[in-house]
Image 1: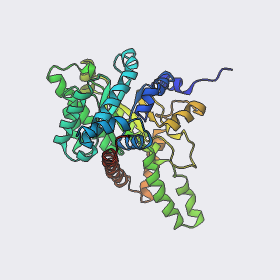
Image 2 (image 1 turned 180 degrees about the vertical axis):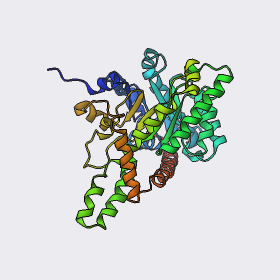
Image 3 (image 1 turned 90 degrees about the vertical axis):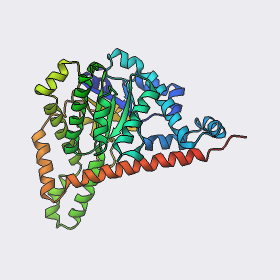
Image 4 (image 1 turned 135 degrees about the vertical axis):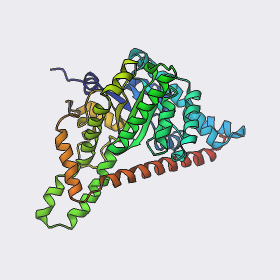
Length: 374
């Protein structure tokens, strides 16, 4: 019996697979094209991923040195490199974009995480990135911070494709969709073509379990063995439950008279994108955050190792809408044990912004130290 292709099966069930990695070496060697041919239909990256690429690859060194020698500032060089990589990757995925009539084949580039608390600067930066990348299949990433929300609405209102990143909680996700819908309405009023606007909402998964499990383990250490079993049964369950409830909100928010009017005008839904889907805990199956979140009109962006693992032994079934009531019970039980999920998701957002800002600054410092080869 011929073995099925799990990646192709995801596509059949309505879920796109994107790769959570991009660097110049992958593009030049043809490796990114091979991922595309293996079923990957888009690419995401973030400042931390790019910082690692800069430090681990010599492919940038000569170009960086030449630009620095000409007197270009390190931060300006960084943006040039990012934009060039995103343009090249977008060209790799343009056939997917065309085949899917603009519904897939996207590559994302993120605004500076150092301005995550400044809506006006985020709007200016997003507008400039969209202009400089000049590709129809580029998405500009804006964080779902309080300052990011008006920027999301403004950019959707200008017809810019937006990847909303660093979403951890359902409450914040609802505000993201509201910003998306309001932006579509703004663009429609201006006479914009809603059929050309695409957006995804990147909901971060595994980091939620990392935080919740840490608190559960501390509580378990203070209990007698008889009281530990219930808490043990909650380990590794918060993130999936949280994501399922977000998807439930997705279905509710993309229905009703308001959405129907936008859909009839040509609008496409803002797809949920599952991010941070590598397994951090070795106790858990390495493909857990893919297998438990399979559903229609979604994206899963996978690190290379997770993609390879799922392609090798992934189990495919429509799981995302299964036992949503059970997911709600999991979160209720966590609350009863004293786990404050709202506080955890806010902490994760703060850490995410700070971590990306740190990586962004480290990339600039790394570039400033590049020397011209002798």
